[in-house]
Each structure stands twice: as structure tokens, then as C-alpha cells.
Image (cartoon, rainbow, N blue to C red; front, side):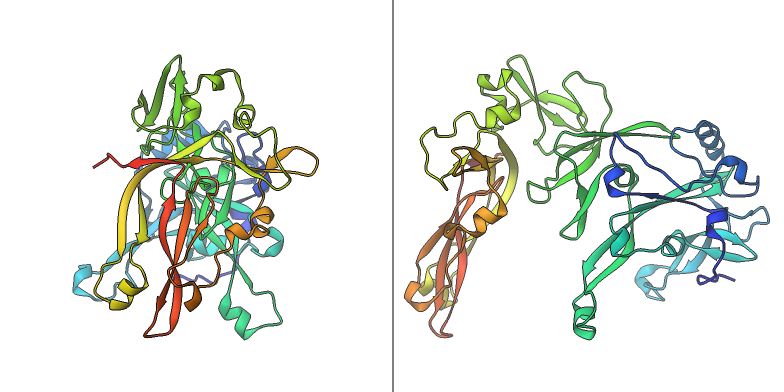
Length: 428
């Protein structure tokens, strides 16, 4: 019988590795509370730290069985991973689901009790005190072993805030993460886990399959400031090139030639690319030195200027509202336009300070700058256009006040972009 609420001495049978967020990097790997092999009987789950002497032995024995045993097998020992065929509770008996039977994976806890990795992970505390901490669960025997990784994440609960206004509205839960997200520095941003390391930083860790190498790169599916960890093989003098990366946002220079990373290989770059790879002045300068090379000498306090470093996006769709208020009011015009561009924007913006120096722009600078605050759309401002300056990695935006006379209400519509350097996409 499967009892998911069974309480047992997890510490004696499971390897629950807690790693703080600050310790997760290629320089510092802090795994604690992993029992030594001497503490585990031959029938217990095997727990192996990355790089330990038992890794190769375990890997070779695991290869003999490609999947876990059936949960009804007599050979099961405490800590064994097994599978059982069960009806999918989501699918039910719908014809589109076939027979509706799926294989669920369990860990044998002894005394006829089976639990999922998810159930075991959620027995560890997850709260404000250990938010962003991680745990690694490793179970199995000499025939099959598996690890799963979890991270304690917190989020605002509107439901909790309404029902319990006097309590903390945050809720915390263990979420499953990838192996690389366990060993490498990550953070939670806009409902997704992203790299917390700067672009270009390498994270390496050792498993039973050898050393794994990951590179922190821009995520092409999100805003430019978000990064992800991508796997690479260290085989080129041009630097790391992830094997599944093909978004033309990773470049390397050799002599006068510029290359871009494409599916693990460096190919000669063509078309638009960040100007730091084309400017010969960059060759003898660090990124920081090159970025400030052309900041104005004569400036006033509060002045804003872009650095020279660029980040580019390719084949990105930009949508904007073409109509004026009269056209929008008629309900007969298709007002939205969608076009794809290759666009290169400054990576950083700077502000001139009272002490006579340029420093990086902050969020507070923008909050206190009226140029970033789009005025409310009113009848008096009908069809007025307001431009918001560019931000790091993003073009400037122009908003038009669209006033709907029949409803006597207005909205600011995104009417266009102010690109730093862009051209129509040639991908298709």
C-alpha cells in the first residue's frame, strides 16, 4: 500500500544535501549531511558525493539496468527506486489519453511503504529562513540510482493576503530544479529560475559521468538581462560554446575575424554584431575600460550617457500600435503591426554625479527621472506622443495617448520604438 504521509527516519536512509545559494558556484560547492558509505548497509540507498571514489563503480553498475524495477519485485531493498503503473489522475478515462495508464516512480522506504521524491523533498522545512536553499535527494541500489534536485522558493500569495491579512503573504515550497541549477548559482526571477552569475562565467562540477561544464549566457527567450546555464564541451581556443546554443548572441574574436557560437561550434560571424567585436580599440581594454571610453568630458550633474558595450538580439518581434484616436475609435482598422528586427542596444547607461564622475545608472535614478514616467492619457492629451528613453539592452519606446470618445476613456498605446542600432531581420 502506498502511504504518502508515512513518517520515517529520513536522515538514516536518505541523502538530503542542503546547499546555500551563496555556496553554489564553480568555486564553492558545500554539500553537508551526506552520510559516509560506512554508515550505509549494503541494502541501503547509495549516496555518492560528486567526485567521490565510488562514482565510477556506481556508474558502471547502473548501466546494467536502464530503468528501475517494478515496485512489486521481491529484490527491493530500503532506498530502492521502483516504478508502478497507475491511472493518470489528470487524464482519467478520456478517449484521447489512450488507456490512461502511466508509470510513476517511487522510493521504497521499508515496511511496505513507498514515497515519491516529491513527497520526501517536502518533508524538509521550506520557509523564509532557508529560502533559496537547495537539496539533493539520491536513492537507489547497485542496479539503479537516481538523484533529484529541489530549491526552496517563496512567492506572494494573493489568496493568503486576503484571508489572513495579519500574516506574512509569502508562501514557500520546494520546486524541482535541474542538476546544473543545483550546482551553479541561480535565482528566481519572474516565475522562472535563471542564472545568478554574470554573462561568460563558467560553472564546472563533477558527476559519475565526469566533469560537467556550463556557461552563463543570455536567455534569448526573455529580456536581455536574464541569463541561463548552457552546457558546453571545452574543446576550442575561442572559448566556451554551448552545444545547444544557436541564437547568435555569443561571440569570440581571433585576430581580425569574429566568430559566433552555433550549436557547439564557432562559425564566422556575418551581419550585425556587438560593436566591441568590431572596434580595434577594444583589443587592449577590459570591458569596463572600453565601456566608458566615450563618456562626455564636459557634463552636468544628472546627465545620462550610454556606454560602448552592446548586446544584440536577433529576429525579435516588435509590436506597436499604428492608429490614431480617430482610427482606433472606428473599430474598422487593424491597428497592431508586428515586425522582426535584429537590434543592438547599449549594455549600460551612466549618470554624471556631483563628485564629477560617471557611475552606472540605478533603478532609483530612473524612478526620479520624469522622462521614464509616462503621463496619464487624458482627453486633453489625445494623440500626444511621449518617448521613454532606452534602457540597458532595450530600445526606447514611444507611447501615443489613444482617446476613445464613445467610451470617454483613454489608454497609452505603444506606438513605436527608438532603436540604438537595428535592421530588419534577414532570418526569413
